[in-house]
Image (cartoon, rainbow, N blue to C red; front, side, top):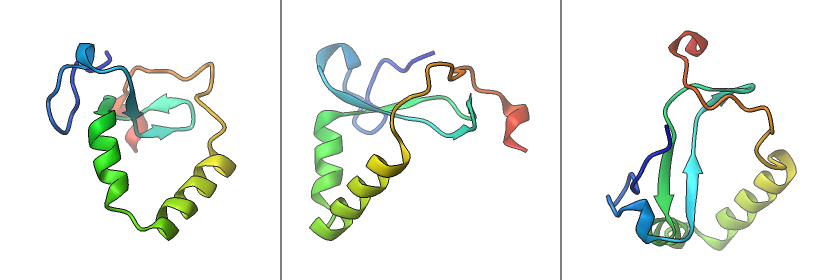
Length: 82
């Protein structure tokens, strides 16, 4: 089940247009429930990072995470943690 508010500030998801979905996965399984971060909280977090860190982060994401797999199972399973 997708969250209905920003995990960090509590702002209702229905009131913002853009957000980041954060999840912990192992292969194609979601290990823990999804959390979302609103655009404002995401920008505040990014603002705390140095340009060098943001550049390295961008390169890493671009090179290793082409997008969400179409067959990703969004049902967390405790059994897949171990």
